[in-house]
Image (tube, rainbow, N blue to C red; front, side):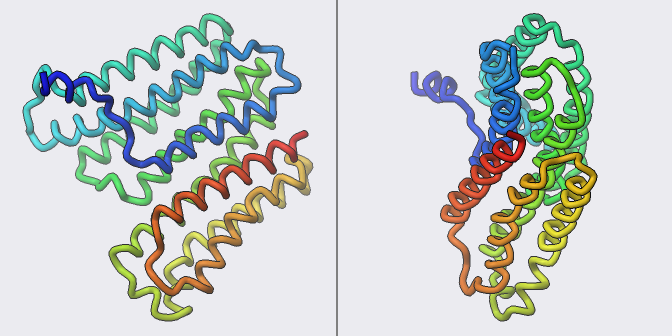
Length: 278
């Protein structure tokens, strides 16, 4: 009885911050398209169900893959195997409903890059790469942000430059936040960087340069009238927060506190971007 109870306990992602990367692009694109959308909210809700189910399936699937790579035998009553199957079936049901109810076959085109990213991610794990590797985190973010143009497509039944730029802006923002969060987590293991400003500046150099590069790209897009000028300001709070840490960080960061602040920065980003497009 105890064993069955443990088996039926859902396997959920441990990286709660990643939920923000999956859901904020969804909500941002949905609200940007909402006033002009003729699509029933039912389709979007079912697509949200597909996104959440696929995201939930990722954790048990990766666990199975890593154990399989180590040569460990999988049992039929394996908890990870059960919930990977449940989540995958739910994701497929939700997505097929959206596909047939909207008749937007272009959605299948998004499955190609998402599938390619997922398979490449898995191949890196099998090859021995650590899941906490920054490049793998950025790879995952690039796949999760594809949710934004898919939501836009479902809502307005078309793909245009706005859908592409919503993806670019989301990817630019969340890649910088992933880089920053990774550095803050690493500080828990190595706090020598806290010694002086020069060390902190060198430590945060990569994310600082990336923030500047993304902002410059968006400024260029704004000059060419590809995006609203106000959209640039959506990235400023994250950049300011990063540079503030470079100048003032004196002790090991509280990861829980960092997580809540990152959530606030992401919600501000979403609100400003939605307002900019309206």
